[in-house]
Amino acid sequence: MDSIIVSGKSVKIGIPVRVWHETKLGFPAIGARTETRAVGLHWTGGVGGAAQVYRTLNERRLSVQFCVDVDGVIWQFADASARASHIGSANGWCVGIEICNPASPKAIGREMYTEHVQGSKFECSYFYPAQVTATRVLVTKLCEAYGLPYEAPEETHALTAGQLSTVRGVVGHFHVTTRKVDPGVRLLRELGLIRKTAPR
Image (cartoon, rainbow, N blue to C red; front, side, top):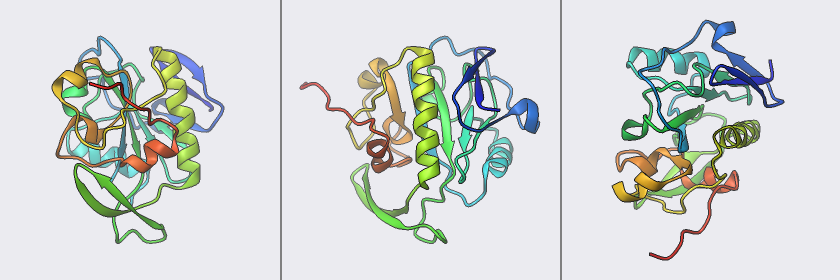
């Protein structure tokens, strides 16, 4: 399959997708998402693939709509318009994408780079090229489906409540809470999402 499901309709994206109807790995919606103002990006922080991500989230009573596996295959666990539990206060207006990446200095077989998020400097593992390509396609299609700009805030730290109330486009998990650093800033730049904010 090369389509995702958005509001019950098939949207062709032209790259491999495994939907919950096929995999039997699906999350139920947790209430209704009345608006979609952003696509939220995460790294998984583990070495498992998409099926393991599903199991781990399910055990933790969390959920997400999409996961990009190490080979660039997109797994869809719920309708893009379903409300899921992946990004705290933004769950009501954000569709989520987990990207399989241990993001750890102990990651085997991955090159490392230095990241700067939330005022901290740390080493983490690169995303594979196939993941970056698939994520770019998926985010582009989701932004088109919801009429969102393909852009993310340039801030490398959590946004204020006021900023979050007006944000439209793409956010990293770290933009929503000070307790997270995923998916890092480098990925947002690599995806061509970072834009300059207007002077305050």
